[in-house]
Image (cartoon, rainbow, N blue to C red; front, side):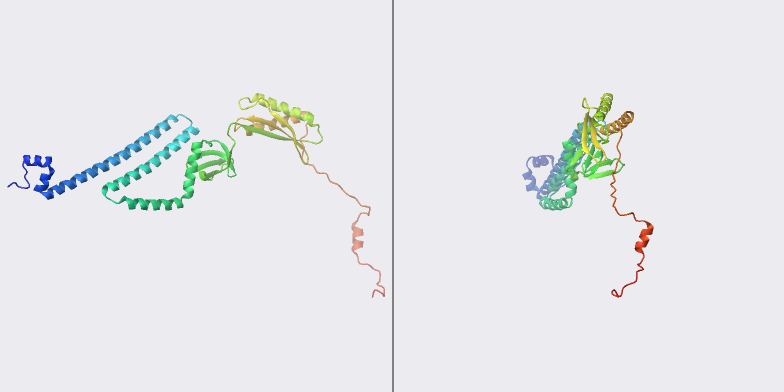
Length: 330
């Protein structure tokens, strides 16, 4: 008789060649070997699943890093670099959550858990979270579309929801806007619906000038045109048109008529251009003796034929009468 603890080499080889011989010889050992084999296969599947998940994430990370590396030499405020960095980090985060979630479900399935109930529970929880985080989801989606559309950039002068300032940062959820007085305004990306951008293609420097009614406008408009042409000749690097426009008599005001100078310049240069044009116009007006009007008011005095009232006559009118009352009045 062969002891169970000692197996003959020829018998072991025959058992490996035909597992049915092992089942006939010792069913308990066969069941133990079968469960061990299933456990090993399950462990191998789990390792393969985790390895594939890590490989996919590594490929995504490598692709986003290569994308970011292409624009790494650009300035930090360049829109291409900002878009690449923001979207690259966003893609890595989304890929990490999605891949590990799927890998976790597959691992639980290999362990033997019922993933149907787990998926149903996760779906209900996701629905509840979606209803509770509608604003957050809207902001994130709005931020992603703003980045893809490439319509806002850092450094642009914009007006959003009544706030005017310079964009300092464009994120997936928030836009940071710096106003002229230093206030930093946080605007959710989902709230950006209608906005104005003063940093696209070109801008206009507009300088309105009030002229006196008592002076000849035909003599003043050539002075304004001469000043504008001189300024344009000295600032060819920011001017986008050959000659400025002097538009006369735009409005009749209470004490002046309005003319204006209009010059097309590069975005962001219009404010400095307006200040310098005003200064040059004031200097030219002083040299030519052109009067700059100020608010005036005409007062009409109406006189009547009655003699003027004096303090004495007013006191007499207010004093009681000394005439005695008649009998009829009594």
